[in-house]
Image (cartoon, rainbow, N blue to C red):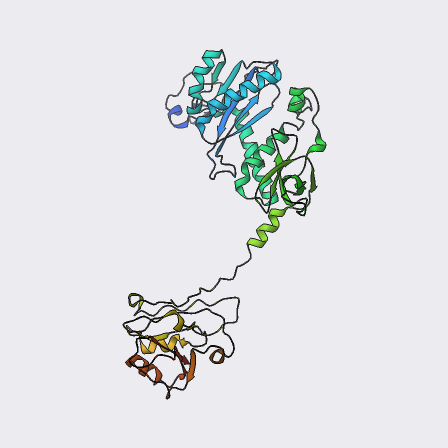
Length: 431
């Protein structure tokens, strides 16, 4: 762009002078062209990278995985890891595997010079493997393995979401996906699959099943006796890397079986139903408080206990609590004179707020025992009297019985007599 007089003239000619300030404020990544390097045989170049850590451990205790990709056939080898430090031993296993399976040697390995691969650098120099490194912070040079990582994670999460499986099974989903990727035809290989290019035979597509579907494995050999069921509902979690069989997760025992004799229901996903069942509201269980057989003076409470919570499933009732009033003595009562309080002998919360806290000779208990009809007739230790006929022996008992809301008094352990060493218990019923 040129300026003549008061006019600006545009031109296609580039200025020979370069601005040194523009790179300071406008520097950005450059688009990298393909190198054009092509391999002629399998295992000439291996791409490798580690993914992780996962936000949670898998069901079999892994948090990372490493993949090795052959540049010629695009075949992927998947290995789960407990820690990044396991990469060294994992690569040695991988090298031994391909050496004996294909009678070929690895010539070059390309990594990102992460900490887990620095220990391998000396090992590569010892056995004659060329270690290719990408430039720092230039992951696009290792785009082959980076794209595979994204493909594995995103599609694996799709597997888990489609069957509503828990996220702890991410390792089985990722491993099953790699199994499928190696058997999917691709245009890069002239509509051949990586499996076919590496093993020189087509894969068996009839062996494939839907991940996370309902299946029934033949489990009779694992049972103890002849009357056990021959199978149980399981969930299909992929293919075994060591067997020609399916990996089945038993919903009852939570065990994983590897079997070839499996029947599938590929339109039913058990995890969906289990999620629906567990999402239903569970009614809370009211707490049960039973009186002690030998109450100690140290457990006598002067603070009123809160009323049990209302059950939202049952019809709403006025909250109540049971306050048995005990007259402490020097000798605790024997177990034969102890009775379980009936739940209808209760004091309303609003009335408790009016009379204040019980005295030190009152032991506050709550009972969730089921009311039995005719408790006075069925239990000889129960005696029901009117408020006037009861014999109060403490100021707190007298004050509670003189209330107009007092309906009846239950005297538990009616064998107690004045002057005896037994504990006398009153249970006052309020309307």
